[in-house]
Amino acid sequence: MKLLFLLFSGLLLVPALAPAQALRRAAAKTPTPPARFDARQRPRHLTDEQLLDQVQRQTFQYFWVLGERNSGMARERSNASFDTGPEVVTTGGTGFGIMALIAAADRGWITRAEAAARMNKIVNFLWKADMYHGAFPHWLNGETGHTIRFGIKDDGADIVETSFLYEGLICARQYFTKDTPDETNVRNKILWMWEGVEWSWFTQGQNVLYWHWSPNNGWSMNHQIHGWNECLITYVLAASSPKYAIDKQVYDQGWATGPEYVNGKQYYNTTLPLGPELGGPLFFTHYSFMGLDPHGLKDAHADYWAQNQAHTRINYAYCQANPKHYKGYGPNCWGLTASDSYRGYAAHSPTEDLGVISPTAALSALPYARAESMAAMRHFYEDLGDKIWSQYGFVDAFSEQHDWAASSHLAIDQGPIVVMMENARSGLLWKLFMGSPEVQRGLKKLGFESPYLK
Image 1 (cartoon, one colour):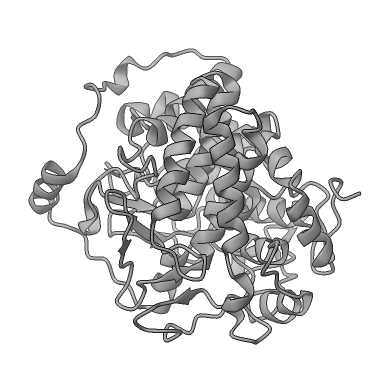
Image 2 (tube, one colour; image 1 turned 60 degrees about the vertical axis):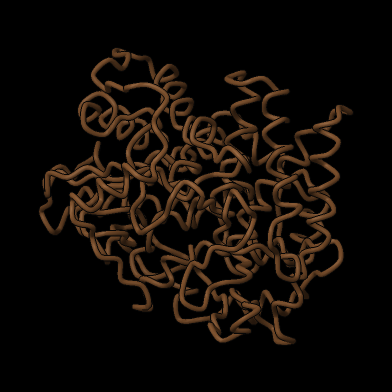
């Protein structure tokens, strides 16, 4: 995500709040939980299937219970850190939350009518919210629909966050097909907004996509989107656009270039086709692939199932090897990805290892490493649950080395848990997204192979 870019570039340094200061802000801004929650009362001795249901359903509560009341959108986070309050909603995290909403409706945790009503609220809000050449900002004010500045010059369009949002919206358009007023409005508004995103405008006439544009600062952030990272979905959707599609040359010369695109090295006896040293944060295997089904997905550059499995195996093997000798690491406790930490937000990976485990990393890896993911899930729930289980699933991160557990939950971390678990269990979101005719045309245009492409 873009916050990772800012961390890597040194543009964002987030100091840890003093405990008293953090508590004052939380008391002032954080919504009151629906009821007192006692993790010690969680059900025990669950079968694997029961544990999957328990974790997936509880994590969904982040979006269902904590959703911003006016807009229905996903809150950026559950706490008040970094001066964000309950009015701050996230566009990308909402895309993930929409996919979680579909999974919840399909499993009967909420009714289809309830899901359609929430979707109706979301699309009606987005229809009136600030957008720039059809693209949304990273953050919106859930009460007013106006942009909340993410960075000093980041006060306009963010096409990566927009692509995460549309990953969910396209799934919703595919799922809500009934001729009810809510479902009809959801489909129509999504189509009209989708047709209006001017993806090709974000090339500035060059063969590369630019991440940001601001009505006040123009293109001054000057951030070209090159691979390999979480942004494959941005290029796929840009190629899939009904009215403003990019050409294949933009993908080949913009995305498939750069010093961290091709890898080819071996780490822990596993060859990594693409990406930075030791793979980078594990969310690279999640964000784009909540909609894109990596099974059989190939182009001239990679087999994406092999890529994501290799990245996951390397992340797992690194935590087992535990070269920094952190307490707790092992075959049942692994997973490095961007999340909160005891020092603030950090892009955890084998090359930036602070001794912090982020549950979303291992749990969202269920499609790629089922046994290893289940072992971590059971350990987190049964052995560590008194400290890290909550009314919204697992907390964002923890460190046994530093005797620390976050009190926070983030939309971009909770969403992949629900969605990737659902994809591992039923393939639901993969089938919906890959079933979109526009997405299929975009993939064909970029030279992809997939079992969905006939």
